[in-house]
Amino acid sequence: MQLLKKFMPIFDWLPNYKKKNLQGDLSAGLTVGIMLIPQGMAYAMLAGLDPIHGLYAVTVPILLYALFGTSRQLAVGPVAMVSLLTAAGIGTLNPDSPEQYLLYALTLAFLIGLIQFGMGILRFGFFVNFLSHPVINGFTSAAAIIIGLSQIKHLFGIELPRSEYLQDIMVNIYHNISGINWTAFGIGIAGIIIIKFGKKIHKSLPTPLLAVVFGILIVWGFNLTDQGVAILGDVPSGLPGLSSPSFSMETWSVLLPIAITISLVSFAESFAVSKVIQNKHKNYKLDANQELIGLGMANFGAAFFMGYPVTGGFSRTAVNDQSGAKTALASIISVALIVITLLFLTELFFYLPKSILAAVVIVAVMGLIDIKTPKTLWKADKTDFILLMTTFVSTLTLGIVVGIIIGMVLSLIAVLYKASRPHMAKLAKVPDANIYRNTSRFEGLKENNDELFIRIDGQIYFANISFIQKRIEAWEKEKGNNLKKVILNFESVISIDSSGAHEIEEWIRNWHKKGIQVAIAGARGPVRDILKKWNMIESLGKENIFVNMHDAVLFLNEDGKGNSLDKKYALQSNV
Image 1 (cartoon, rainbow, N blue to C red):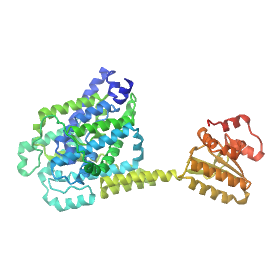
Image 2: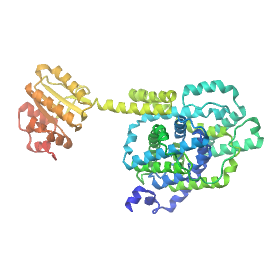
Image 3: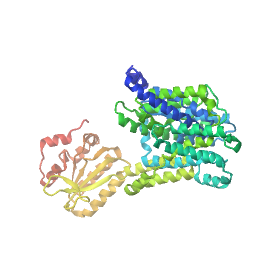
Image 4: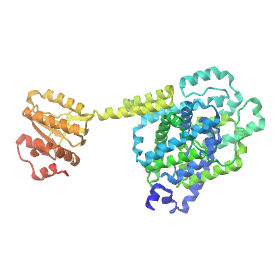
C-alpha cells in the first residue's frame, strides 16, 4: 500500500479527505473550470489546432495528473508558452492537412510524456536545476512577447504568415496592417479591458468568461459576421474519442528536439509554481521525480484522448489556490464542468469571435513579461544579467527553440566557469585572537614573509585544479626564497577527485624538496578519507594534519607535538 501511495499520491490524501475542505475545493474547481473553457480554446488556437482540442486537453490529462501528481493545487492544462512551442515544432514538419497537424500534436504530446515519465522513473528531477532563473526569466519574457504578437492577426482580423521570429512578425504586420478589421479589433480591445480591469470590481469575477459572453452576444446580436468578424463556428460536441500518435521514427526524429525542450521548460514552469504554492501550505511534500511522472501521465492522456501537450500553469494555479483549493479534488471538479460543457454547451460558442480568444491569450501573457528582474540583475549581478538578455534576444530573433537551447547552454557554461574558478584566500592571524581571515577582506592583517596560509573554498577536481595551481604559484612567487611554511586550510573543501589528489601530492613533494614545511588544517571527514585513500597523510606526515589553523601554526612555529586529542580527530577516517 505504501508503494501505491508513493506512485499514486491520490491514495495518500483521498482516504483521509476532510469534509471541511470540500467548500474550498468546490469553489476553486468551478472557478478554474470556468477559466479553462476560454483559455483552453484560445491556447489550442495558438498551437495551430481547432479550439475543441483545448477542451479535450483539460479532461483526461487533468484526471491523470490528479492521480499521479504530488501538488494539490497545481492546475494542469494547455499554457501559452507550450502552445507556441507546439506550433513552432510542428511547423518544421510542414503538415499538409489539419488531420496531419493533429497527428503531429498527438505525437509531440506522447514524446513529452515519454521523456517526462522516463525522467521521473530514473530520478532525473534534478535536471531542472540546469535552467537558471535568469535564463527562464529571459526566455519567458521573450516568449510572452512572441505569443502576444502572434495573436495580432486575430485581434486585427488580418491574415499573417505564421512565424516565431520578432523581425518577421513585425515586417508582416507592417505589410498587412492596412487590412485591419476595425470591428474585430474593437471587440478584442473591449475583451482585453473586461479581462484586465474586471478583477478590480471583484477579484473573484471570472473575467475571461465574461469577455467570452460579451463577444458572443455582441456578434450574435448585431450580426457582425456580415462585417467580416471571424468566429469559431461549429464546435463539435461530445467527449474526446480515442486517438493514437504516430510511431514513425522519421517523425520522432524531427519532433524529438522540441519534445525535449518542452519537457524541460514545462517541468521547470510547473515545478516552480508548485513549489511557491506548497510553501504556503506545508501539509504535504512535493516530489520532483513524482511530478515528472504525473506530468508525463497527463501528456500520455493528451496523446490518446485528442489533446495536445499540457503542463501546470502559473495563472490558473494561483487562481486555484486563491479560490480555496486544498486537494486535487478541485481539479477533478474542474474536469466535471468541462465534461458538462462538451456534452451540452458547445453550441453556445458558435458566435465566439476569435478576437476575444486573442484577448484571453494577450492578457494572460502580459503578466509573464518581467521588467523588474533585469533591472535588479543589472545592479546586482552583471553575469546573470548577460545570461538573461542573451536568452531574451536569442528567443526573440532566432526562435523559441533556439533561444531556450542557447539559454540552457549558457547556464551550463556559467556553472562550469564558476566551478572552474573557486574562491581562494590568503589567510593571516587576526590580532589578539586565535582565528585567521582573508587578508584581502580584512584590514590590519599582516602576513609573515616566510609563511603562506591558503584557503580553498569548494571542491578540488580536474576542472579547477589548474586555476588553483596558478593562483598558488603566483602567491608563492610573491614570497620568493623567504617562504618556509605552507598551510593548506581545507575547512571549506568539500571533496577531492583523483586529479586533485595527484596535484596536491605534487605540491607537497615540490615544497618538501625546497625545504618548506607543509601542513593541512581543518579537513572534513570525507576529505580526510580521500587523503588517507591516496596515501597523502603518510607522505605528508601524520604530525602535519591538524584540526584547525591555530594548532597548525603553533606546531610549525614551535615544532611542538600538538594536543593528542585534537590530533586524534584530525586523523580520524573511515578508510
